Length: 252
Length: 303
Image (cartoon, rainbow over all chains, first blue to last red):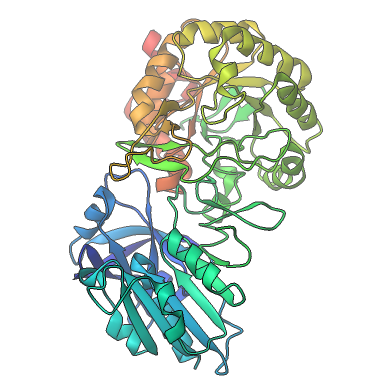
């Protein structure tokens, strides 16, 4: 259930260009959040909350980690929060990745692009605990934007690709298909063009995609963040029905 | 003891606070945060004759002290709303107001007629001022003769009181209001959003896929106050005021300007508990300014 909660900023670190990693303390959120869910974060002086994915959870310490890129005045204001200050959030929001069916026999591929990488890290850590075989392909604009490479390597084989070739492989995540081991299903989050390319590259694989969109209420009431679906309903709400959807159910 | 109750055509409100249409869905999502029976009433999201899928995304953009939206009246259609949403709301002991929209006079008439069969309905808010759909909507709200025609038609078709939602995107809001009162409206709700636009500096294009969107939030509150101040001096039907209400003091300002009740819209997105919080705080603010009831405040600016 979504609650409005105050979270204390435990740490705030610039881990890559324009990219902030923030650790927040709150027992309700840390105990309820599952991989793929997000926090709808209030930013002082701004009308709309900012939806930000959960990148990691530490239940023992009651903490949740978020990562976000500074792209405007809202994320700038969020980045300016000092350690010890309080952030008002709605959460945990949305539905997570469906992973209950996965067993030790399964092998999954995580495909992340830019600021779409963080929710896949939380997912990867939970899958690893379940004994699922994990490999990852992470795409970034260029070397200075790369983050969490070591963390993903700790989960499984990890390839990094940058658009300009300044780090790792050059090109896009989908250029690395031939270098991958066999996998049963994929989980992906990133910019829309990347998600389109991913679903086209693996048309016969079971896939799950997490979307981001400008949101209003974040609870399913305002119909701002909808996505076209292939079923008779015609649309779903990203904040409430998603942000994770089966690749087969949505139109990209 | 402070008396928060207000009596309007078809609506016996235990307090003057209700969520605004389009900002509250059909109440389900917010019912996980609080008991909806705390509210004075609820105004549902727009109902059209058939299901509408709305506009492409992005549908919202933030502005200084507000936001733009262009949802495009997405809704499951009036029959589905009567089957699934009104029965849900009927379990709460509060008046239910349906927001009625359409592209043609016939569609407005159809929706209003269908709603007569609803399990429970206390009033209609006639949406002739949605700025975000290509046909209908605001056309009816900016042309005085069309506004009068659609008001007369829905009034005739419906068996509950009809409140007409006025668009601020007009030259003379007073003339529109007078025409609509003459056409038989039982009340007015004002104001709907103001048409606006925001551009993305990187790609030089409007942020909202529909290009323009309706501006709401605290940015429009002074405009709404001015319009209600003017209109309330020229009509005798009651006004439900809306636009940027975020606290109990804002409610008092609307009542002084001439509103008899208010709707809270955009503020729900920032704080899902905003309506019950304002209701709980209202007695304190009324007392502070020397009032013992809502009725004493209404129109106070004109005395």
